[in-house]
Length: 226
Image (cartoon, rainbow, N blue to C red; front, top):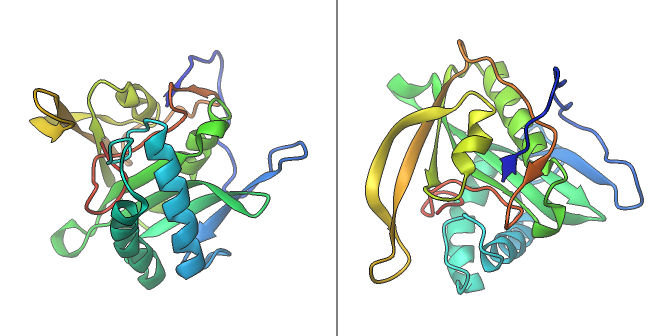
């Protein structure tokens, strides 16, 4: 999802708020300390969302033809990380349906001051609603509260996602040429983005546009990708 340019200062979205209207969308913390348990029901809901986003062509680690079983194999590890506290996340809920999720995994040991954004995705129907921005704002705020100083994310080249992440202070750190393969002669680079939370001035957009209404990072082994 690529945000449109906005004029004037923009106030960051609060971590928990509602969108007006009959289809209210709430932002909730997932896992320990949150109001949404990272249990089997959440896992099923995440598989449904992830599969739906992939089928719509979203850059979330799979081709549109991916099966639910393939998605479920990846989701299982992510849900376990959220349950154990090895990762933290936020989810968007509309009428008791999961319509967006963002997950960040803090580093360990000598990299405990860092974190990796392993998942950012929203339902295609929420395209242009600012939902991806709400998730990113929550993740970055929580990262700062947890003392993280640097963040990284991996994205698929050619999707315009560098523009979306750039709004939050991310810049290109490097590339893996031809790392993502859709088929014969259909290779794309994986772009490694990074942000210094101690130095970056984050400008939070309020409107996003995308052909798929999704954003993702390229970690199909640990979160949405490609």
